[in-house]
Length: 336
Image 1 (cartoon, rainbow, N blue to C red):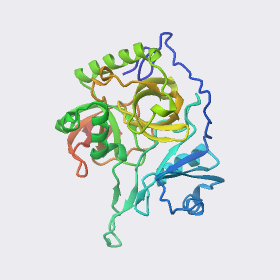
Image 2 (spheres, helix red, strand yellow; image 1 turned 90 degrees about the horizontal axis):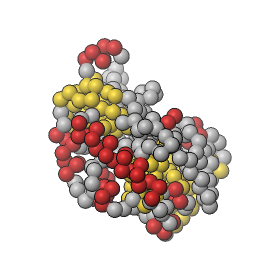
Image 3 (cartoon, rainbow, N blue to C red; image 1 turned 135 degrees about the vertical axis):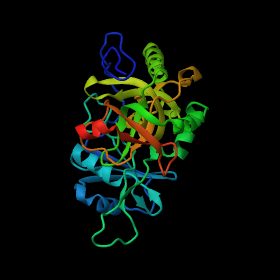
């Protein structure tokens, strides 16, 4: 899926990713984590106690109408990423916390660029008592972006067509998957099923975005709301960034949490870095990526993103029928 610039997305006329200058935005620290969907009764002390293992240094508690959230300085980007993996999706007083990074959009390479910022890799031990010699069973909560209820909402807003959500469950048998995002220490990942149709859609979409990127105006602060469909620069690792379609998950002060619909990847970006992309012509192509999970393996620490996996789709997930279960071919398992 590489463009002429070597990235995943719209190539620039000069073959290099364009660097944005975000004027007027209060830049958040790389060491600061956003904690959203906080129960109103949860105090600053409660939040600090929850994050005590990550050595919180400072907290800013915020209330806006029915929304309640906080920004917590954990001292380093590594601590922020560890806190996201540990507590995003953590249930507190009936609410699931949403943690994300706030230091993106400054042109620097993010230390955890392959990790989704709004995720739920919640690891829980089964509640049923097990014999002492039994192997501990682990259950993983379905990430928010992969839930059918969320995808149905997004698809209705972006594409006005829910057939994509139904049709992806029909895939079975041998398949080649190009991984677009993965949730470490879970079985879940997003990938593009490599077919002639998907290759054609990728080429058509990225050429269209490359042509339109500079023509589309930046959105005003008032125009950005949950559910806004637009475009933003997606960080593509060493290849820089490329403009791609996205959907606004949440708006927090001068930041927006967006989901890149063609990659299944979410990120936190400055509000004034979003460009308009609301005409239906830009959304005629269905999302390129779809959710998968491994039948046996979990996603390890080694990079998976942009790798091609060859194996077999063995059927739908038990928890969500549109999440397909994938297993490696026998020869790849032996080589691993």
